[in-house]
Amino acid sequence: MRTRIFAFTLSIFLCAIARAELKWEQTSVELHPAPADKEAVGHFKYQNTGSQPVRFKSVHTSCGCTAAQSQKDEVPPGEKGEITATFKIGDRTGTQVKSVTVQTDDPVNATTVLTLKAVIPQQLEINPTFVFWGQGEALKPKSIVVRASKDFPVKQLKVTSSSPDFQTKVEETGNGQFKIDIQPSDTSRNMAATLTIQPEGSSKTFYAMARVTNAAATQ
Amino acid sequence: MRQALLLAALAFIPGIGEAIYFRDKVSWQSPIPASEMVTQTQARAWRENTIWVDARPDAEFEREHIPGAVLLNEDRWNELLPQFLTVWSPEKRVVVYCSSQSCNASREVARRLRDEAQLKNVFVLQGGWEEWLKSRK
Amino acid sequence: MAQVAKVKFVWRIVDLVVGGIFIYAGAIKALDPIRFASDIDNYKILPWMIAAGLAFYLPWLEILCGLALISRRLYLGGLSILTALTSVFILAAVAAKIRGLDITCGCFGHASKSWNFSGHLALDLAILAALLALYFKVASGNRLRNAV
Image (cartoon, rainbow over all chains, first blue to last red; front, side, top):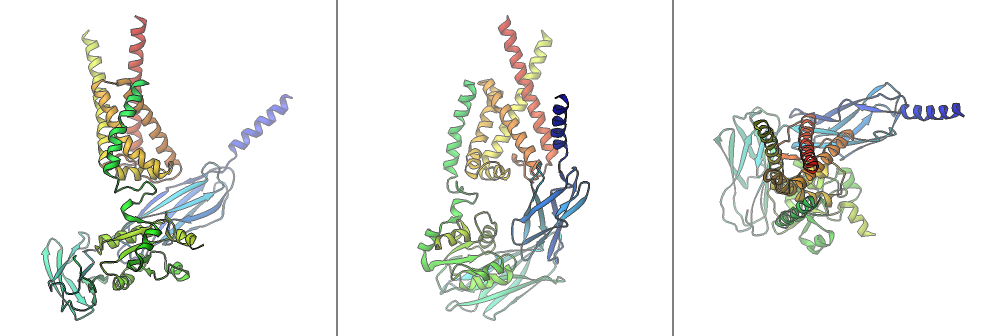
């Protein structure tokens, strides 16, 4: 009888200690991609510190712009590995936070949320990126303010309009700031132009838009 | 115990007052402010003054989208924005959607249209694409 | 007698400091309840409606309880509530950390945005220790009074 109780207790104890446990080196990664980078890649390293293998059930990202992959489907005890999250930067700006939800058969931590924070460098801040006139509106120039980041100083700005119907004038206002004055040739018909803004010495191009719309408007 | 209950009850007064003060800025259904959200019914009521904006990735838009919707996502923002602005005019109301309420893309696109392009009347569709599909059945 | 006065003075300072901390923390959150609601939501424990409700209510509860500690009116009630709030918050923060959620604490609004998890936990545990010390001081004082 005593032996049976002992064996039963021991088996419960062994079941309790014989468990899977995935330990993450870090669950949050901050990346600083360069201006020309198209992707930012985060590596989330883990190790199975338990005595049972851990199986990945799913690795799911918070948006279509981030792809995540696990090196292996099953992690034996003691083994290390990593999940790679690739964030497609596209035309995104500012600080982007994306998450990767990992589901495993680890009874202690079945779900882990990994966070990828990408600080996308902003060479130029353009405000606003769109100016418009209503039909018949007074033919007055409107301004776009361009601010260069302290990390990427700009001495000169080249602005070209895609349409001769819109004239532009660039003026440096000091402290890395520029003012672009835009004026349409007339406001009696619909017209549009894309303004290409290029900092001197930079291969990266920025854009703003100008339009004469088909309704009376105030901006 | 009585003291704790009294303090807990007293705290409701300024709390409710503040909730009333911020009533336009908060939505009790979701983290998106009430003034930013719009239901399908509201958006459809605007009829031809509504511009539907699809903030999902290209492939999802190609598969299916709200009829007449314009694609504008952050993957190709610089390329797609001029096309969107060509169909936009000041009297129109922009309704941005993406896959379901929890997807952040529609909020980000709406935010950029408001902050960067300084457009007015930009809203996020409550329930997103999934809600649209459900209403079709 | 002078020794007793000194001890009383020290406990009074603890009242003022702890009360002051909660008034400050409550005020910062009351100024931007929308952000606080989103911080509570980040813990992913409560539905959004409850998180939003708490965001409007909790800061004022903290302020009132902080004032209770400083003014010594409704003192025990304020102390109990603050002890309960701090304990629940520490548990929620640890649970979030174990679940791998990367959250901004939210306890001092965005004034504490750049602090790390250990720094926050240490401060919260110190506040809890002070609250428990005040609690036991009152309890032992009551026992003495009842015995006399």
